[in-house]
Length: 192
Image 1 (cartoon, helix red, strand yellow):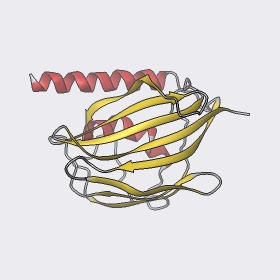
Image 2 (tube, helix red, strand yellow; image 1 turned 30 degrees about the vertical axis):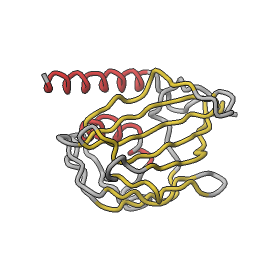
Image 3 (cartoon, helix red, strand yellow; image 1 turned 45 degrees about the vertical axis):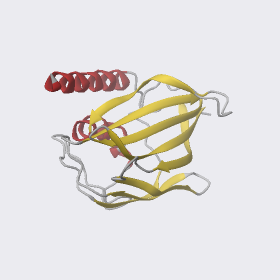
Image 4 (cartoon, rainbow, N blue to C red; image 1 turned 45 degrees about the horizontal axis):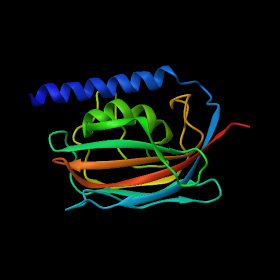
């Protein structure tokens, strides 16, 4: 039963990812500016600490560090991303039907992180986070990982993203209980 549920989650994530990639363009018709990061701790313990990650400068780069306090394996750790949109940027958010359902960490990093986040990171230049090869990396090793002046490369992002403020809530789970994450707010505008 648990294997079937896990397989269904992997299938769901794969379908979402294929759908997102299908609608991608080389240059997006929008721009993305990081507005804010609001890290949060876990309910009982914090295994992923994003409290040292900030937005800096006029260009609102991501800068700082993420601390992973335990090796993140797929037997115990999962994550999810919930997306919300505020078209007027007034703080009135509606949850979007897209996002990433609760997914085993190693599968999610192999299938999603490598396509959506990793293109923005250059190992040894703007991060020391391990490069994740096509075959994946499991477990994700504990450590403190820096991120230096990162601006997202949106070439692999979906073409259709609502304009306004997009709020992404990234939550990590250990045995189904929150162990930390962050709320990221990004301003999405038409490209001029």
